[in-house]
Image 1 (tube, protein in one colour):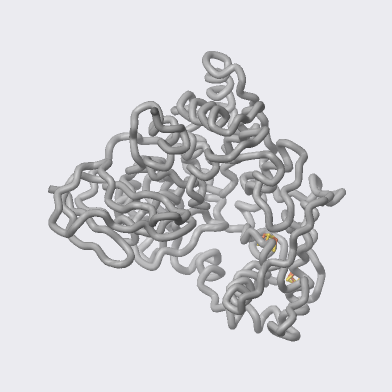
Image 2 (cartoon, rainbow, N blue to C red):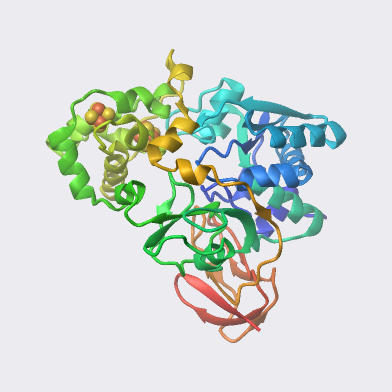
Length: 447
Ligand code: SF4
Ligand code: SF4
């Protein structure tokens, strides 16, 4: 019997390409009413989702149709921002010519329009429960790059061996290109002509939610949607490198309880019981107690979007970092998420309090970089060696099924999902010889 679509997606090692890394086959194994292709791409400077929708739109819509087929969804919707006019035109044309069942939903230009829960609410009016996922309200959401990978897997049997990403910021030629998984970030930066400053750092992902790479030889993963190069004295870099001890001290001494962080928090505006200003007050006065208050456990409801610290707080404080720290402490202490309310009503001013992306870009000090002309280059990039991380997805690390010295071909399985666990398979992204295997990665050198 032919494999189901979910089995083919699992075999291809597909995970959420928008940054979450959740194994996609699990979503394909569910039953829902509505399937949404997430093309919001709300992180400033990133352009790879837009490029894929504009130039590979038919494959994205094919992936969405396969998602609908697998999940029984009666509505198929692609959501993207209205101000991406050429992308909207290309998607409209693809719908008209080949995918008449697909509906187009146009979003305003705000951040974080691509957050799954914000998107579900904007598109369907439904609110995902606290601590829940879109499946709880009959919806499944997949990123547009992920859906293209699904189409490639089902129609051509292709495993995930490369991905599109945007290289932006302080580089000579910002561009969107396709690179092998496991290639070093430096390869992408070279592809963009190299840095324009002598002292720089790279962010893996977007400027809001991406993390600082420790070194330029860190590998690209299935989740790397962008690489942002910035001078190492850029304020955004300094905010990402500030210690949690410093953030806590600053919050304790400076927070004026203006509650701007709460008023603009997208999860608070959805009706979730999260009020970052109260967390700042309670946490910084008392620390973690045996019975932490709901203001502290609200850390489980924070999506780390960064609206509170990069945009809302005029004093430069970081409720996000505090929540991130508290969440780690709560998890280590075995405290479970007590927030489980299901009937939620979004705030009456939700639509008025959205963060305009253009203003966010200015606030982040990225205006000059955002004006760079758009360049897309789909030409193949050769990587002499790759380092494939065994954990680049939600769930258990993949287990190597190859040995050092073994010859592998591009697309060949190199690591398998552990029996009975949530995870994703891993495939060779170049043809060559396995040169090293450790607890973290499989390395391959081209030969
Ligand atoms: S916006 Fe800043 S100063 Fe105001 S309550 Fe939040 S953390 Fe405190
Ligand atoms: S990062 Fe800040 S704004 Fe975003 S969900 Fe968490 S508390 Fe709210």
